[in-house]
Image (cartoon, rainbow, N blue to C red; front, side, top):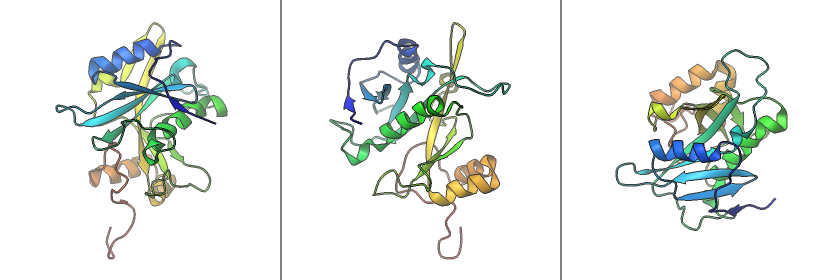
Length: 216
């Protein structure tokens, strides 16, 4: 399957309103990556906000099957935050730095492919067994959680009868994935926060579940 950079916004679903919501709270959308039918909107780093932010638009085109769970959102969009040094200029699907865009699109299509839903606290491995997103890092899965790098007003968007919630995809190492599976999402998120790991992607960060020199 091929992918390309598309700087013309799709007009499906609530995508124009999602873009307006992003620009109200985070800043202007400077480029849009088109991957597997989804728009990945990019708010690039500026002096006052020195991180890049990628947000899906299109995941909320269709309702997810929540199985009747109370308070489970039927509509969500996902995001990732990248350091300002991340090479976005002329970035293409063949580049090693493209994997966050590919990951967001893979997650966005998952509910419709599986007939289920994604929600806060879900831990998603990259395959079975989990494989690294890139050869330069051991990150091989992610957990969904509210972003710590956006204002709380950004967390949700109401459009007519549609309530859309926004979650960050936080990349994880294999041992962190296992900890989430064995000990639960709350344990995993607490461990990440204890080690000052937020949703800013850092492929070289410490694996919080791996011992070093006999200590955690």
